[in-house]
Image 1 (cartoon, rainbow, N blue to C red):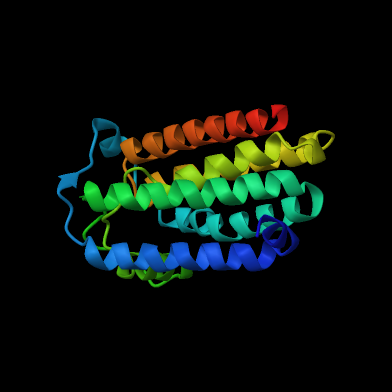
Image 2: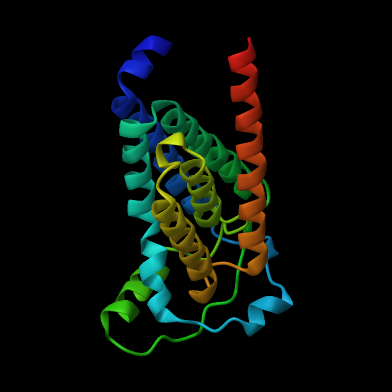
Amino acid sequence: MVKWCKKHPVIVNVILWGAYLGCFFLVEKIVTEPRFVIHCVWDDYIPFVKYAIWPYLLWFPCILVSLLWLLKQDRDRFWKLSLTLITAMFCVLIFYVCMPNGVELRPRSLPGNDLSAVLVKMLWAGDNACNVCPSIHVMDTVLIDMTLTTSPSLKKHKGVRIISHVIAIAICLSTLFLKQHSVIDAAAGSACAIVVYAIMELLTEKEKNM
């Protein structure tokens, strides 16, 4: 079974991501009222910026491009990133069910009919501002950045590593400027990413020494 999975990485990942997305939308329908409202004083100092929708949406192609790059250049890290993302996200979904939480940061109205405003309205229409802490958006972004920038395939490409850092920072900040997440959500997402990445590194090292 393991050999078959390694031989068919695309099929395996389509199944895993399909299963995750199915569970994600199920949780979105089940958990619609937060038991805990996430907020901190720093949230009040962060302005709403509708143009932050662009780096926010960059998260989706960022995942795809990163996985495809590693699939071609660094198969070991491809599997490490893929399994780490899926495992971490499933754990976060379980946390959402056990500890329903949300934010009340969005402005009451969003004037304008420009493309940025329209995209933000579409995002809010499909997202009820629940299930926010820890932020999956931030967690995945940090995991991807750490995996890419430590990959031997990018060791000689300093420019690409810098771009990866810049994109990661932009995506993480966009969650705050769009009022999708509290600073607490972003911090929790970053912490989860660091812990999960460290655990995966330890398991990988242990497997090599066996």
